[in-house]
Amino acid sequence: MAEMMMRQLVEEQGLSDSIKVQSRSTSTYEIGNSPHPGAIAELQRHDVPVVNHVAKQITATDFKSADLIIGMDEQNIIDLKQMSPRLDQNKIKLAYSILGKTEEVQDPWYDQKFDRTYRQLKELLSAWLEQLK
Image (spheres, one colour):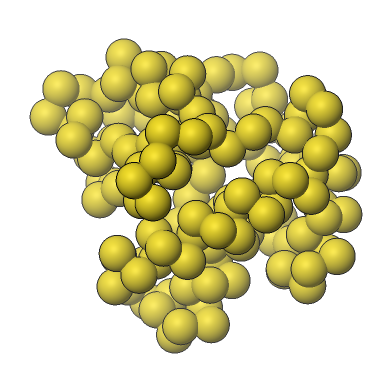
């Protein structure tokens, strides 16, 4: 959801040539899977373009090439820091840190509350884009 929502924001601002957005997983559980139907339905309710996407795990190349890596919850941050080269750990940020908070973006996979996750991401992604600009 976050990748597609952020891509839409980037495109609306005319920044697609300078800001690239990619979603990656820290685990192998969903590798190769398409987005959850609940996520797709929620994005469509808000007219967010749904792009062809399959889950991919983050790699050393991703850490090296990325300027910013945003984790949705504390476990993501722990996993990302364990997986990343030491020199790239400063690129890793908790999603809510942009608002000076330690809250977590809730994973809707567990409770099917895709509307809550959409609202959380809506609150955060515009702030991250402003910082990136």
